[in-house]
Image 1 (cartoon, helix red, strand yellow):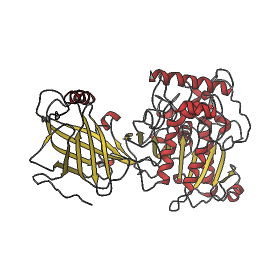
Image 2 (image 1 turned 90 degrees about the vertical axis):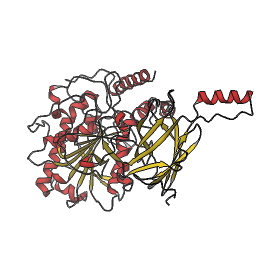
Image 3 (image 1 turned 135 degrees about the horizontal axis):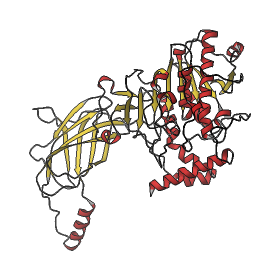
Image 4 (image 1 turned 90 degrees about the horizontal axis):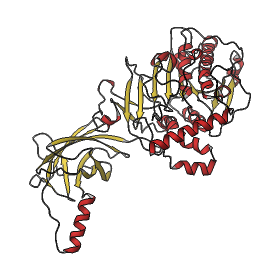
Length: 524
């Protein structure tokens, strides 16, 4: 039911987008028509449309592209926090660098937007620009590469235009290098959706052997790019360092808004990268009521644009950096099996990433919250059960974690299978607050719904009866690894004379070491 709703909504959205553009089917071979208009800053939307075969003219070339028109379609807007305004720098006009107060001693960050439905620059662009400029210890020039006249087209035409815009950005950086000796190694391109591939083309088209310093791809567009060769999309070869965040790769009818395949040295997949918490289609009705059919785009772009807000959050909340961990897939990650930081197996998501080139792309996974700040704390729990009955036990538990800073109560524990034998189960626990160092665990085996109904019925008939307390199993030990600190801990039962676990009974586990007695004191 949910999959069919997704597919239907995605097709409806694509259909409305095409109607909004020109009211006819796009022809990839038609000549590009550029409309002239002023761009403004209210919120809008950029997502990806239906899939077409990649046009031959849209491929990367190792040679510098020829631009037939001398006119530069891309506007380079230097952002200023003094008045929240921007100043346009014109290619080959040195006076505009002075007039706009470009500081050649500072690094340069260029924000590259993506495809546009309504032809206006979105609010997130200025939010990111403000966040970048607000850094006191890391001052930078911030330029918005406004290619709206080429982005507000049929999706297939906008895809073809990404090569042209990439070339114009490359030309701009070459001019800065020639005119004021500004090194391309001090340039960081941040591209969202189609803008991620624009950034990749800029990196590949720039002349010379030296590369752009860094490119960040924020949920790089999927349609017309998924499955293509590195020369036809953003790839690790496009800069000295490339990182990417994938937030909307959920496929429907063979399409996904964001690209699923790795495109960087480090590729982050928050919450698996398919979809994001807090982005639910039940919100579509509220958005439609507020904004009409544009409410559909507001709903669909939630997960797509989450990549942007994760990146902004990494700038504004420097003390709460989200960590991603190298893993094969999200199912393995959810077992807590990938919380290892040895040999570059983990890295910081976002602006403050550790810039370390890899021979092969690393896929990093993490869990985030549905709102700012997005950071959570990852823990691997290995629980060793010793079972004393033949019947399988439904794994319905809760845990209360006591830390040196804070406590968190009644966390639901989910095991993917019933407990059928003596076995150690591994799972991932995430917390949205920093509890400090874990010192004590209170573990409770909860009643199942069926058991509770049976007992309530029996207790109604015989009210003086007491609930049977037959021991079912015991927990020998709980091993914990904290992902963020890499600290390993072992917990044993506080009362070694009573290790049996009963339904609805809380059992306390305290820190212990191999061959030592449990510590009964709570650390604070």
